[in-house]
Length: 125
Image 1 (spheres, one colour):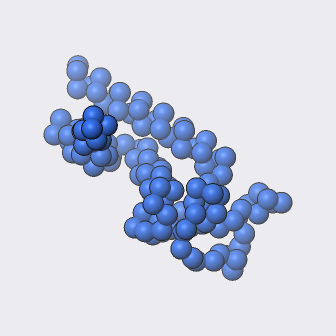
Image 2 (tube, rainbow, N blue to C red):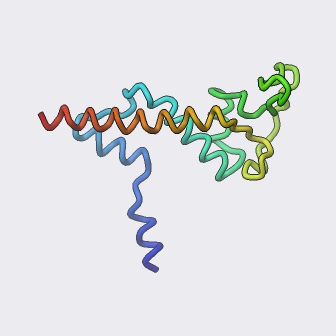
Image 3 (cartoon, rainbow, N blue to C red):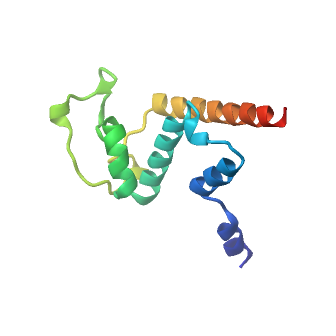
């Protein structure tokens, strides 16, 4: 029962952003925000497969739904893009996040926390 109570206490990213906004901190204005939001869409697509997050992710990063060409290490041309539902993203099918993508997500998470820390320091001054 305790685990269930803890889950209810967790804050969604929207609630965290709202709480910070009340302190005049707008995390959506951070330069890292668009990539952080993209990462949220990737995570939701991995967790829930096809749906609203996958649709939004297709708009901003259609390349993530195209099998990367291992020879040239680039994405296959547009004519090879197959628009289909995402059924098994956790098995390496339907969603193709590269090592380079993961590296950029790690970098942007660090950047986000530095931006938040700098903003909080300015408030204290």
